[in-house]
Image 1 (cartoon, one colour):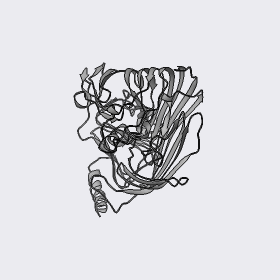
Image 2 (image 1 turned 45 degrees about the vertical axis):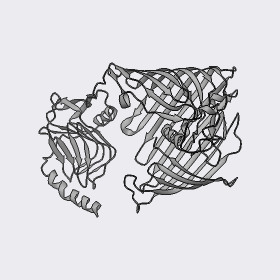
Image 3 (image 1 turned 90 degrees about the vertical axis):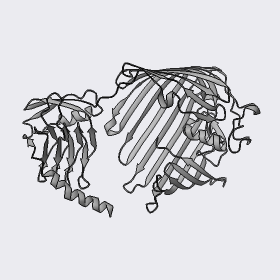
Image 4 (image 1 turned 45 degrees about the horizontal axis):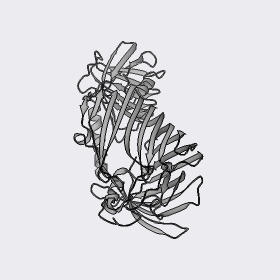
Length: 518
C-alpha cells in the first residue's frame, strides 16, 4: 500500500513541477555542436566525452537555469543540455532540467540537476555534471552518472566549448594518525596472540607520495615487528609500492577474513591458517585501467620480492594463546605449524586483478604468478594463484554465487612456505582443520539463496534459504581425490548457518560462517 501511495504522489506532483519549467531552446541536430575541452581527470570524463561528441547530438540551452523537454518530445539521438550562463563556472541556484518525453540516446546536463518525469524514457545513459540525477518511479533510463559539486564553464554559440572541474578534494595533512590515533585494526591468532599495530602516516604532494611506518606488538611472541610502506603515484592510475617488514605470514588468508579468523581464534580456538615468519622486501608497479562509472576495473602489476623465511611455533605448551573454548584441543590452538624450508626466497612477481559490477551480475578475480630466482634448496618452480567470484542477482533477488581458489605449481616442488591448505571452518568443513595441503590446490563452491520476504528482522533484513555445495582437493605435485560437501544453508545478513554432508564418507558438519561481499 505504501508503494502505491508513493507512485500516486509522484504522478500527481511531478506534472506540477514540470509546468514551471519553460521549454529548452534546442537547435536542430548538427547545427549546434559541443566539445569537451577537459574534465580535469574526473571519473566521468571519458563517458562525458563520448556523449558530448556523439555525431548528430542535439544541443539545448536554458540561459535562465531551468528548462524541460515536454511529454510529446521524441528525439532520435543524444541530447546535451547547458543550464545558466556558463561563464567562469558560475552555477545558478536550483538550476535543473526535466525530461518528460522519449530520447533514443543519451542525455547529459551541464550546470545542474536532471529530472526524469513520469512517462519519460531514455534509451541510453543519463548524466548530470554539477548536480544529481533523479528518476520518477514511472520513468525508465539506462545507467545514471552524477558528478555532484562539479564546477562547469562553457562559451560559444554554434560551437559550445565546455570545461568542468570535479568537486574539490581536501588536501590530506602532512602527518596523520589513521583509524584511532594511529592504532590500526588489531588481530588475534594462535601464533602471534594479540597483534597491535600502531604508526603515523605521512603524505607529500597531496598524497602523491605516502609513507606508512608501522610497528606491531605481538603478545604471544613478545616481539615488536617493524614495517614501512612507501606508495608513490607519479601519474594518475600508476602506483609504485615498496615495503620492508618483519612479520608473520600465511598462505591461507583467502579462506576466511582476518577479523573473523581473529574472533574464531579467541572464542572457539579455531584458527584456519598455518604460519611462518619472515623478513620481506617487496617492490610492485601497478597500472589501473577501466571505467569506474561503468563498474569496470583492471589492474596489472609487476614486481620483485626478496624474503628470508623461518619456521615458527606454537611449539611450546607455555606459549599457547588463550581462548574461551577448546584451548587444550590438539587440533586447535595447540596445533603445530608445518615446518618450512628456512632460508632465502627471492622471486619475480606478475599479477592481474579486475572486475565488473552491474545491476544483476558482478565478477571479480585475481591471478598472481611467482617465479623464484633463488630458493632455500635451489628449487626452480613457477606458481600461479587464482581467485574468482561470480554473483548473479535476478529480478526477484534470488542470488547465485560461485567462487574459486586455485594454486598451480610447475617445475620443482615448491618449498612448504608456498603450500596452501584445505579443511575445517567454512572450507570443506567435513575435513579436519587444514587436513590436506600442498603446492597444488583446487577449491570451488556454489550457492543458491532465495529470500523469505514474509520475515524481516530489524537491522538484519530478510533471511534467505538455499543450497550450498563445495568441492576441493590439495596435494604435492598433483591432486588426489576430491572431497565434496553439500547441504542446506540459512543466511541472515552476512551470517550463514550450514548443515553439510560428504556423500562419499557420510561425514556431516554444522557450522556458522560469515560471507562478505568482497
